[in-house]
Length: 234
Image (cartoon, rainbow, N blue to C red):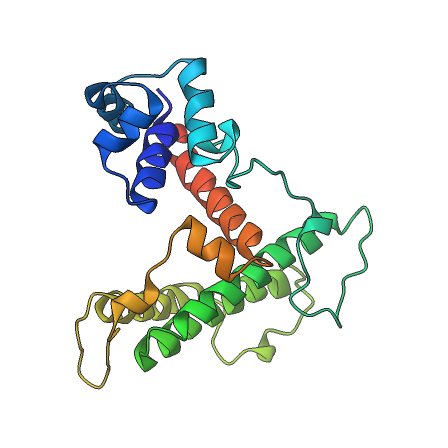
């Protein structure tokens, strides 16, 4: 059973503010059958898949969760805009993966920080930035320590304490972020004041961030595929 199809069908209908009854009429099926499709209780045939793709103006691959792009586009490194046009990477066969992922992350951060600026919460800005910096710090230490000849005195925190200490600091940041995002004000902190400012969907994100939208949805797709793979291994 393709759970992505059920989720995306529901998402598209709700984003377009269509009732299930209206969508079912337009698609030529009963409301009950559409409900089964959206809940993942029934699998549709090819004919309905094509009709739904035409109705919502998306690709079949997008409906099936095979592509994060509504039009089913598969992006390459050349399709991803540079976050800083003045600092372009020299792409060689050995550096394609690095350059691709660097662009994906940098461009997604542009979307993230743009949305972050709308939340009007210093706690969200401070703790989100702290969390991201700690993640980079942690990965940098692993790279640095891969060469045993590198002097560990480069860091103030002992290598034995750094991993668990970094995780603890990240967890503390995440706890404050979780509170602020749900309107809970901790001592000395604030929270998101107007959640409506953060309203977003596939259409609004694509329109507001045309240069970076592809990077954002592909980062989400890659991340969720990695998470799902853990369940499969279990």
